[in-house]
Image (cartoon, rainbow over all chains, first blue to last red; front, side, top):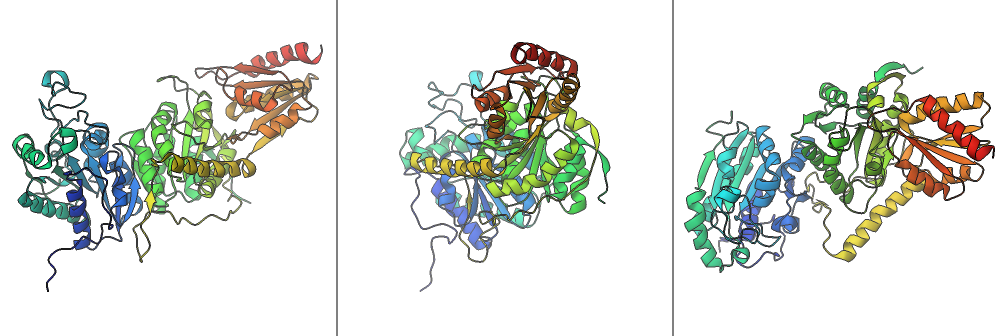
Length: 249
Length: 356
């Protein structure tokens, strides 16, 4: 009988602490599948963020370092420069990467740092309990934006992928969504490409994964998927913003 | 005979680090320590190492964290405002039990302060510095040769105790030139780096560099483990110079640049018939409490001299523990105390405490 599916070897066989309906589990699986497919588990060193994925190291079956809030790209830089043969990836949320770690991500891209960044954008702070993120949509409610995010008060959300795609050292930048089986398949391809970019030594690679946070959005999981498609994708369009074929400068 | 070369302090500390096996340097420009990153940018590529200028001190110390986590010998350097920025990372490095070297060429503060030498970051350096329950090992050299010697052994010490080591200099020590020779330190048996994250090869279990322990009893145990290593450092690593303390009525206590001035004061006082000695802590963390306590059994008074408004003097008082009066003389803002001013205090104390 032909086996058509199995749990990736690079994931540890245990259940996660993530809330029901959270998309972190999907992203973890896609990253682990890419590590399996490219046979890089014994060279992989992950960098965990501060946020819901702080315990990512509990789920991946490879070496890991846990970084201070937002500093994962700097930690990854230290690892990659000291062990150039390693395959280094950071796993960061939108508070971690787009707010407190904005400088670190921009300069890692500027240097063309040969790392792979998995950026989970769910438009809210999850672990701390639903505060406003730089990616929270205008009008979207958060515990620190109880009347909905107001543009006049705190600006419009950051489009990280578009911003990083303007940086010469960025070799692969893509935005995907985890809202349907078709989109998950595209996400899988993008994450694999982001690792291949590093393996080819082509430069900095980032995949922004539009994700849901049913708990802090106050929605059922399916409802959250629909909300993502109807509200996030129009503001955060999907696609590849930069590819190695397009040429890192 | 080992060759002696004239070296500027900042360049000497960099060369010593390279000779001690440091191969990675991550830093950010700030006066008065810029010769360290500049030297490393030229020197490290010659030995197959890597220099990288980070986007900020915050990023630099986190690059140190990442590289140290792979078992590499790595360092950074900065001066006071930059060290404040690095404190987040230093706390994480301490929590994750990683060895590294941090050089702080202290300048005047608070805030942007000035660029002249100061000792006003003593509290920050020796009482942990960042958040959480931890100490680092801090060396306070008083000459370029000593800065070289201490740097040469700093990486071994950091790896022995798995904690950050700091060289606490100042603008004078960074900028002045003295002849130095590079001598290998006494060899130490170093523990294996069986924690380094380099990729889980050959079937070994994955490794984790980490400082989060959400369960209070686990964090309790973790902090005790780190504290136990520092206790070992207290037993094995305390360094202190004592000069003329056996018969001294008045004992000067000073470290670094200030200790050099105090040495002149001691000589001048002895020539004037005053029995003055000097205690110079070389490790300011762990602090030589016992050495000072021993001298306090015979001395009539202490005078702590610092380029601050009184920081190390608190540790001197703890060590003396009421056995004798502890006086203080300090300058701040980048002003170096003069031998004449310190001598005046010595004479004042002699009149009040010795000849009464």
